[in-house]
Image (cartoon, rainbow, N blue to C red):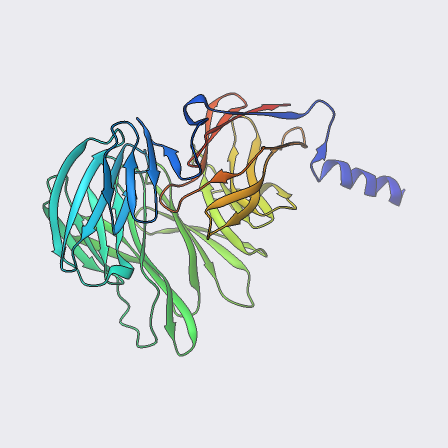
Length: 372
């Protein structure tokens, strides 16, 4: 009787490989010839080198001290610094210069950062925690400091933002006080208005994500000796739910309908209900997880795994894994060769049709068809 019960648990509580399950992979023709530093944006291929960006459509090239790409991949913003003043240039993805204007005086090259919106607005980070917001004509709409003023020091502040710029979160991932790591975050509530939405003296931030429509914010917090936590808020900073995980969490994605969240660590992917925290399914993987997402329309988890090198920007041993939560079955397929990646462009899965997907953001776009 015990043996029969254990057999039931193994079959029905964990995904299993079933005959007939498969993944079909193909490289999109527009990216088939790309080298590892060339990426397809909305209207053309662009090469990012350590100090310059080159638009392959028209051969335009600009040297930069910081560069940003809008999340819809339609615009590229470039900061060029002469040691004092900076110049900000805005290009479309075909290489046509749209605007250029002078920035504020700049003094600390190591902390420069550019964040670009699909409407052409730009956010410039200078020093460690200062942010200046520009409209498409180069006019400053506001500026704000995200500094903690901690005598123990702090990490460089980051920005999490949705495509339209509806929700902008400025966050300091690590603030050191008395040997303990804390963190803080604030959300933009008006043109010149910001609201503190998170502060901790003993938990640091590993990642902050804003849903595509800007309605939800998710923060991954951690403290040594405790479980990682995912704190889910609305766009005003009101706390909605907290999900704990005994994993070294890396990232989180909201589904398009916002009803589920996909949380992943280096070797595990978990799907939870956004508001109740109910676990809807999980899977463990032997290779490091690079990105993962859940598609409720297909009851499918997709995961990209491999060995990534920060130094080379290459992902080797590339493998795709699909888990059908309804059928409790899995399929996997290895991709021949390596994928090039860049800190400038997010790698993500997009759904094209039923059981048809695309990996975007790497040097080659990968078409994925899941057969279940």
